[in-house]
Length: 288
Image 1: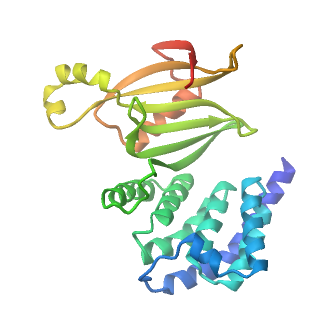
Image 2 (image 1 turned 60 degrees about the vertical axis):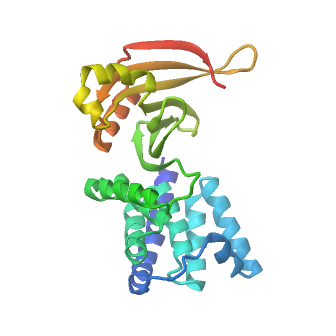
């Protein structure tokens, strides 16, 4: 525990020195006519810088945020205020427990280029993690607007809004830009243990099978395009004797009319903490 605390403290020290300089640079930057891609940024790097960039990505993926932060600080000295680097640095800060500094880095980026969906989604995540609900909700609405205008990638079906710690476990909550899957998933909470292993998925679904009953009970609401939603979960059971991955599915409750994020979050956390009991469940379901 002491090692993790000292690493985070060191990371915060690096980030707090880095943030004021980067915020000043990005806040003064004009809106670019062309938004640089990651590939275009990499093309500007010399071999040593390219190796540094690769090393930072490796450090991030292998949960070494302090090493990644040091590398990003070095690269930002070479490319001050670069939006690509600031987004990668902010992602590292959010994951490593310093979302507040990430928010300070991201705000100027989103102000300079409101149509940058990567910066917008990261800012939404950072705001959620620091408990800034108005910023979080504005970010969710903004991401839906970007999607409606075709400014998010076609393959992007959802994005992470928040990471919530529950004891040794982490619940990562994502919201959908478009409902996906057989049961039309609008949001999902993925619960992982201290080793990062997934053991439970919690979903907000709107199954077509449930809509006739909703229309019968609430014809006015159904006529306005509203739907019935359900809270469900899928617990990992490991593999069976044939090597097939299996789950236990549980249904908790219906919600008529699409709930807001705060309601979804509350329901997900109650399920994850065992404070909500399932109304029905089915075990040993094979996962395709």
